[in-house]
Length: 194
Picture 1 (cartoon, rainbow, N blue to C red):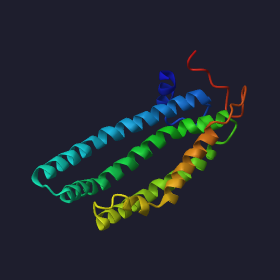
Picture 2 (picture 1 turned 120 degrees about the horizontal axis):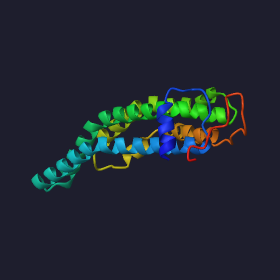
Picture 3 (picture 1 turned 90 degrees about the vertical axis):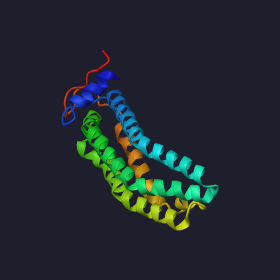
């Protein structure tokens, strides 16, 4: 796996040549784990603040509704920053995956332009995220903490479906079999584990 990661990072801006399936997927898993780790570390302060708010509110009030209101206010205040951070992390990891995806497409005999198939729906879902988060925050504030499922019912599931479509298209184009031997994009990629 380390060879695939090094290859992917060394060739972040190389849109020529070919990447084999194993090489691509190992690098993609690395980026997924990196994205998860950065997101988790970035949300630790929010979780600590939310827990602190909950414990403080619970100590100073016997009213569970007041505690829930304080916690919800804390989460609602942090959502815009978390959303912006999530979008930035998503764009950076997508950009890091792009060149490897283009080379993977080349390996299967396709033009790198086919990277637009999963890319366009992914960017649409990211562009819609701020509006969706704002809508969810408005519903949460309007309904109050006594209605925890209200935000779920108000979610625009078509935007989520577009994000899942992007993932399905990525898997479909990246899982195509390799072209044996040399093709118009270059020689067959070398197995990096050898």
